[in-house]
Image 1 (cartoon, rainbow over the protein chains, first blue to last red):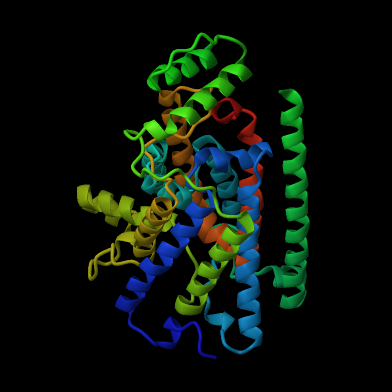
Image 2 (image 1 turned 90 degrees about the vertical axis):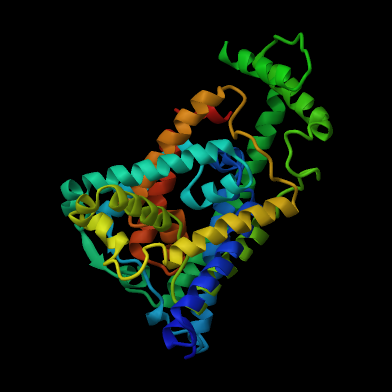
Length: 200
Length: 220
């Protein structure tokens, strides 16, 4: 096992911050290339006219998931040293619903709003102001909602543990699911394009 | 009708007159055509003179994004994020204005830290600076950097701004409640098969589709 490099002490925290910028540049680059600097393109996902969000997101998840899995099998990456966000089921369900509403109302998510701002979208700048306000409201209400915030805690729970299945089986299932979702997305986009054509 | 006035305003902004006051579809089509035909001349509006290039193939961009995420796992032992950096910004702002108030609130104080190091000396803060740079780099290379407002043709800019602020507010609140946003939870937690992250991801799509119909006039 030689990775994660940082956890094995191959470089200092300061070098880690430099690498953070480099990784961030890669992140921002592909977000913008995917078309996620455009609120209209992002929102189109929720009208079934442009399924780019689903396609890019699931491709990214599958790519990274397969990479982590095979590097683990090959003995290169120690998966137990990779930080997995702990599960707080109900706060995450509620947060997901609120965030989803914010996505279609505002047109962006936090990461995509950054690349939208850096490519000149004025509405994304307003949106960023909204994010700061939302976090401030959350901070002010925190003492009142702390009990809910720490409720239904399951620790670092993963899908293989939930379904009592080997890790590789869940990886395979996600790949199959993603391929099904891609096929459905391509079919849906064609259908919507036809519908639009018939209208005009 | 709201649609026609907005479209008409856009047309005048482009220096063209139009006698078209017909149905919505035709107005939109004409508007798009005018925008298209004036694009090369509209140097004032474009930062880059290059014509915008088409976006990258979705699956290719997804693989690129996935490899960046994988690099973060392998190099740092952690995934990507975005909303965390904004929490640092808000918490530091509160701490600067009302230090005692921030210290007494566990949410703010966690981001502000114990004062031995600057709260901005944080991995996510640096990563998000990179996201801004990477987006600008990509936009510049593809001729897509342009000062504009993203909205459908049937809504005014002012209304779009209201919705952008409201949506951002919900996003900020929701991301804190869920302990991460589309980057930290859906992408990162999704790839690591986190149970809460997958539940979160399903709910993001559910929440967005639930409000899509109400928001249709903003985008279509």
